[in-house]
Length: 209
Ligand code: SAH
Image (cartoon, helix red, strand yellow):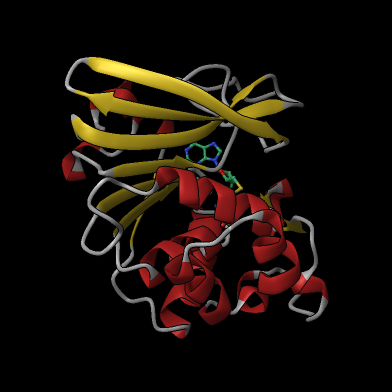
């Protein structure tokens, strides 16, 4: 997976590649059948959700890297899902807060994170489009669900000293992974690549259908 899907597609950061080697993706998948769990695709989760393709997890993580590096960085993930992305961030040495709207998914993620030795991840249940102001500011925010625009509360909770937010922005069925960098009150935005994520459902996302 690391060699053929990540290194071959220009993911070069050794610490990031190491994190992907260490986190057992099959442990977070609903149907844990290697080699399927390590295939070049998303994996199904309960409640109609998915764990993103490994390359997309890597590209988004890479784009979110805070100016001071990952170690000790305060990071928010919106959309805990299986806990896989949270485990990658924990492997990188970040202080991870992750919020999920489905209580059952959060519970399963908690089980897998602890079973795999990731004890420090703080899991919250709620509408992550509002962020998690109690633990802000964040050096990095990764939103693993798609919204129509960048939620203002997330921009407000981003560290003003170069904090980075990565999120797929677009319609319900296709988006562009977008990177936001905050310098004081200035917000710079650039677009990375097309993607298809499940919708961010909430106050600053899409409505539940
Ligand atoms: N990062 C996850 C995959 C996430 S799939 C992993 O590594 O496995 C997207 C997740 O976002 C789903 O679990 C969905 O329930 C959740 N979600 C959607 N809208 C949300 C919201 N407003 N707040 C928090 N979680 C949300």
